[in-house]
Image 1 (spheres, rainbow, N blue to C red):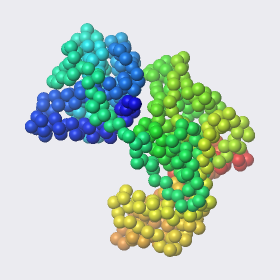
Image 2 (cartoon, helix red, strand yellow; image 1 turned 120 degrees about the horizontal axis):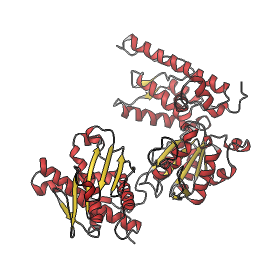
Image 3 (cartoon, helix red, strand yellow; image 1 turned 180 degrees about the vertical axis):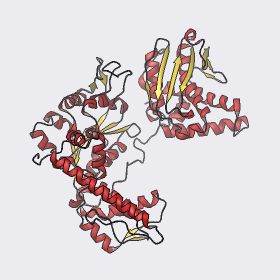
Image 4 (tube, rainbow, N blue to C red; image 1 turned 90 degrees about the horizontal axis):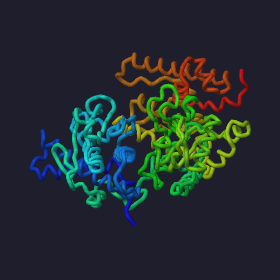
Length: 535
């Protein structure tokens, strides 16, 4: 059986291969640190060779034969570049020219110290185009490398249209692709060994990746981990329920990391934070001209998560119309962009999360029962911390160790009195609240032993360290007071408007997104207010 090289192409293996081949080529040239035209020639050569390997791997896995047309070429280069760490998408083009845009570079901020690396992108795009069309001119209109904030690339396959334009040219001469400084064999069948090098096919489907660390000592959470182990290798949809802050996204990421999709995208979205008028565009994308201001095709989250997993947090916040469209995706694996007429396939595993009141919402008609059944193939309920107190101290130790590493400080532990207070506290905000409390306590505790944990119910301010100036402590006290007032205002507004986020946002004159951010900061669950009578 053929190895699926393209499926295993990822940013890490690409960058490792790039560095290794750069050193190898530099040693052959006798210049480990190449400069000027030698350096550009070397980068262009790597790009041309990689383009042949990438194209061959893509064709083999997609069972694609023959010369590409403009659309298939555009799809191929976008797919390739996104595999190695970009964030490319197609933009409005014209016959004889393909335009793509990008908002993330696989080389990260390093590319700003070495803008010549952009020739790698140019030669990958140009090599594939020249191999299929005979000619290509690549023009880098905008580049992250020079501070533009994004990349915008035009690839011309029509020599006449590109005649007066400045760019990198590539030609096919018999079985050779020639750039301005380098050349490479044109055959896409030449590089199966190269495909294994650039794409790094793995024999272990899930590697050693187990996803984010999940601390569990209580019997109920050990049972959750057993369910995750069974669910992860399947394609079944998973519905995770529990209070805010219990770690629903952590479980979702662990399921993805342990699945066969581990090397594909994990896309997470908080459905409650999306304005209702934009929900369908965010999820499914829109076509150019679908509505006023839709100047370009927008790729939704289902397209971005293609082949991977899509985590829909607070799915109970979706409008009923969107729920119907989501149900269709789950049933048929198809969807349409807003304003579109073409069915698009969705090879995406959906992992959803909601609060515990989902069944009550169904009874009230706010959530579709058929969608619930489709999502609830494998249910996972995460109990709050107050119902699994065996996990509290292991979580505290884990969080404190993370904080010591993050802030490059010595490890800290809790005194017996602090341990008693932590274990007796009910943690209404669960793990998220614990992380916030411990981070604040860690930063303002001078010694290796933390004697006082700044729990919200105490209303205490940070202890003053030896040698710490007084105004710093006053600033912290002021910040804590502001946080308490802010949390109280949010709670009053939620009570007044029966947990309706839109009404709360209007009354406070902020956006819905801002309200959700503040609720997360203060570990407030708006659903807890939806069962109260409206004032």
